[in-house]
Image 1 (cartoon, rainbow, N blue to C red):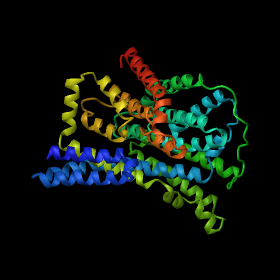
Image 2 (image 1 turned 90 degrees about the horizontal axis):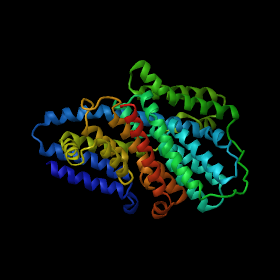
Image 3 (image 1 turned 30 degrees about the vertical axis):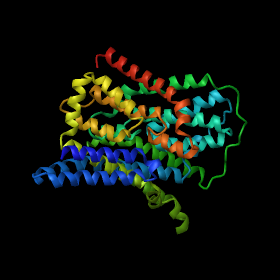
Image 4 (image 1 turned 135 degrees about the horizontal axis):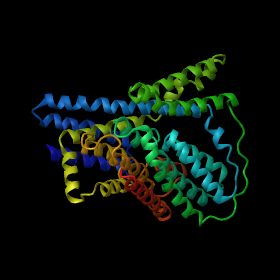
Length: 424
């Protein structure tokens, strides 16, 4: 039974990884993978009570993540519908190539920390199209946005889905992960920035930033402030109430929903609908939520049959050093989706073995969050930029992979050095 489930998992995983060549959405492969693995377990086991117990044990953890993502996506859409992001992006007017590279990358780094790397990549890609006329230069800038967004998302519990998973799973705490990973994440960005800046010279043609808006200045600023404030409030809410993070996220959604109702109450129904939370819900990427459900279910099944525990023992016996294992997992996340990788590691090593804020969890948050930058398909931000700018896989590998590797390795060394210095 175990061998069959592993074979099914590998086949499903290949279908997910080969989404573009197969032209089958990875959400489809993921959902089928999650259901088929558990069905296989159910068909071959004689202890159905134990199966039900394991399934019921897994579901709350998955639902916490999915509800959290649903709320976060709704907030982001509400900001975007009110053109809130343009409040930030319209402030960038420099035409100097090096200065613009640093400005856009640092902005992406900090935006990603409070939004997420995918949303940040989309917002910044839209900005780059307005600022940079030449395609070759724009591809380099867009690729650096991938590195910046992934680095920025790694050091906060709401910046990257893998860090969020570790936070919700009580492997890391808010203040500690921000304190421990900020410097390594910043180094992960600045090493590639310095490297790429050597190849950039001169200025771009000055371009006028669009000033045509469909919302008022008050509406844009209010929704941007409420949205970012609401996202930042979630970890505070969890700390104060000890309720699951999705409760804080839904509280923020409720406040923003109420605000939109009051803000547009005098408009006609058609106009009001364009800015409503209901419309925001229709715009969110529902396929991504279904993808997470499927892959987390499948990984949960591997944990239930003991396959991940066996993998942990094997890695410990062969590689031995946990730091090296986590570093290699980060490199692997450039090829394999980081969500199931992190889910697998969380099942491989228990919180009883390694308590909250142990080095393994902090380093995993960094590695899984930033390692995906090595390939254009290695992260949600990369895939988004790939689609928007039509970046070729091998172009990115030739021009950016080494840059990403330098940043990833420099940040990893920085984290391990700081941890060793402080005896962590």
